Amino acid sequence: MYVLVAGGGKVGSNVARSLLEMGHEVTLIEQRPDRFARLEEEFGPVVMRGDATEISVLERAGLARPPELVLAVTGDDEDNLVISQIAKEGYGVRKAIARVNNPRNQQHFDLLGITQTVCATTNILGLVEHEMPEHGLVRLLELQKEGLVIAEVQIEGGSPAAGKRAGGLGIPSGSRLISVWRQGRTELVEPSTVLRPGDQVLAVVPATATADLRRALLGAPAK
Amino acid sequence: MRGVVIGCGRVGSAVAKELAADGWDVTVVDENEDALARLGAGWLGGFVVGHGMDTRVLESAGIADADVAVVSTDGDNTNVVIGQVLQKRYEVGTVVARVLDPARAKFYADRGLPTVCPTQTAVSALLETARKASRQRSAAS
Image (cartoon, rainbow over all chains, first blue to last red; front, side):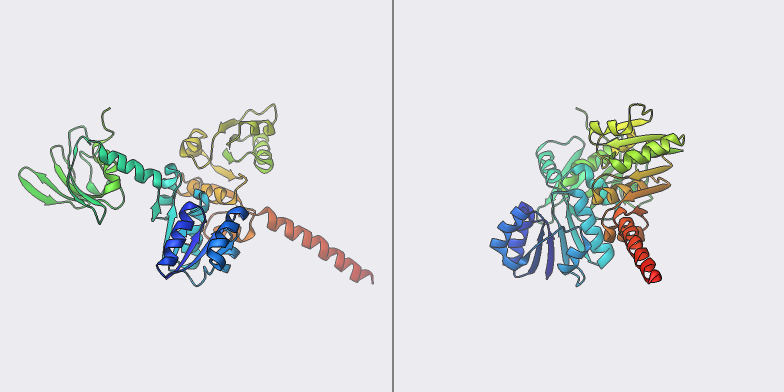
């Protein structure tokens, strides 16, 4: 597979090294002269010097082939967004993964259609929340390999989700409400299902997003 | 009319002052507090210190009610990202972003974000001057 890695910092250089060890073809783009010189010593012709948000630089790196995968992992969120947009919208790259440095910028990636993102801060926070008891959300099963949790949430009278349709709740991406248990019966959740106080909702949710799911259904936790 | 200008450098500050002189209600956003000086001592419009990527900053600048937004920070990528956020999230009717790199300016203009490219403008003007001189010379000979 051909992978274009934009940004040769800690993330980009380590990912590039691993991909090369796995036998993939890699081009690594780095703009800063000092960093480029160090990378060139290790990677030789794999590393290219230039601004990875410049279309001519991306083309010289083979963006038009196109690569099977583009990794936009610079330390600048705007740059990562632009690299991903040029790759996907301009050159038909099927898969682009972008690094989000500031979690506040996540919403901009979502808005602009860059759906595959990685944010170290959010991931670490997710792990921290994992270690803390979460009122109102019970983890029934953890699927470690898949990174998913099956959880149960009880809707209360004051919950933001009460009285709302399941389709419009803004639950975290990658999560699904599976079923509700109400009045002794289980119903599968459709987008049109209206949640009611007393419902016990079964959901599948990425392990890093359980707190977001709880917030979407039950609101901010009491301090 | 309500305008928001993001990035108070030479370009942004001049645009803001002209619009305010036209009677617009203008708010300027810049990361650097000192940029306020570029608007002159008599600046009566709004000024918000903060980054244009920050939605709280945009909202306190009144972006939700803006008719026109001009994005002219010193970063091309920052400008195209903010420009798209203003179009898609805040549905600002007229958005224009300053992009120095002609290729990126065209890429985003083709995708529905109006861009102004000072580099392309300068290239065209310089070429026009050079070609005019050449035409005059061949006409004279």
